[in-house]
Length: 278
Length: 156
View 1 (spheres, rainbow over the protein chains, first blue to last red):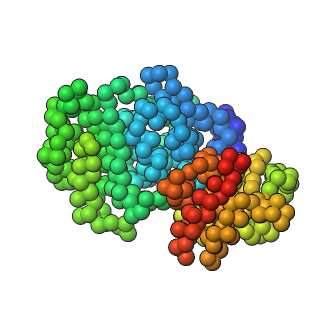
View 2: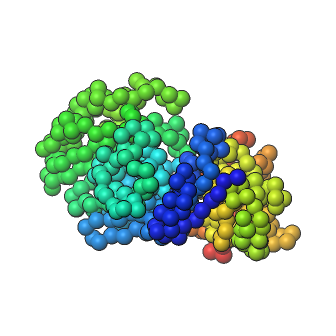
View 3: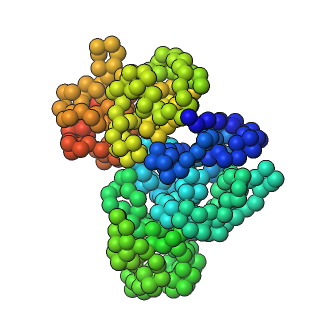
């Protein structure tokens, strides 16, 4: 039998963790409890984060949004600031898992699980999200692309916790999108996904562009050379095809139960076509 | 560990291993076998319950997480012999084939109708998208939820 502990705040969390240094942290449970049951992970103690008050809230000061790590995907989906200013993150939350999975799974869990297929990750990469990590001795801010360095591998130090996600709210004129291909519409782990952030001038030409692909490499991937192709250009089928050709050479997909590597390469290019204005 | 929670509107105080899965606690300790276990991994929705009115998967919850919460299972919906309108719509509409997914489907429908009492058919499909029916009787399930929404209006 495992011990299950419920700290109410960060202070209690540290003291419980120090008393049980081998404990595992439980956020929404949609990954951890599957792994525990199949004995891919063994734990004697579980520290459940659902009552830690510092990890719960979403705040904004007008320039930035602060999303507590224990915010679940449904809360993300219903948040008006996320909906109106962070379109790609809203769209990702909408296609993540299923209704009950969205009621349970958390943004912090999605980040720390660090799956290349995690739906919130490509949006967080193009939004250049910063992560606040806290430990008993202090806190530090790490950009998401430095936080995740392989499948399931993160920069979390021992006894360190993701407290919140900090995102600069895009100014007007920025468009963001998230597109995903899975084997079905619900409960699908992405076969390939694409998040995009584009600054558009009134004449339709692209200023800064950021593109991030999921499920086509060990982590979410961005390619500055591909993004640079869009600079100063108007979005057209031709330019998107050029970007797609370059990107599909750069990705490093694997073949697995969901799709072959060649199909993923093709999707890497073809998902860009969805950025064409209607 | 002593766990106190409301189960189908009755206060329960039970001793349980804190790491027992909620689906096992409901079925084995409390005899509430209406909640089904399908995949045990959060992919099928058969084990759905309402936690403080929101659908969650009892195969991915630990008993200790029930403490202090208000839990509704399929057994808590009928008023004595009188079925809940969603249950009644499933019966009338023939939305049950083998019946294994039905409790989870009804719970998912309630979750949907509580936040959206007048859903479009596409919204019903989305609301039920976490629940698998291996008999593939989806059409009649969607019909039943649509009928229940009409029947209930804003009464939920």
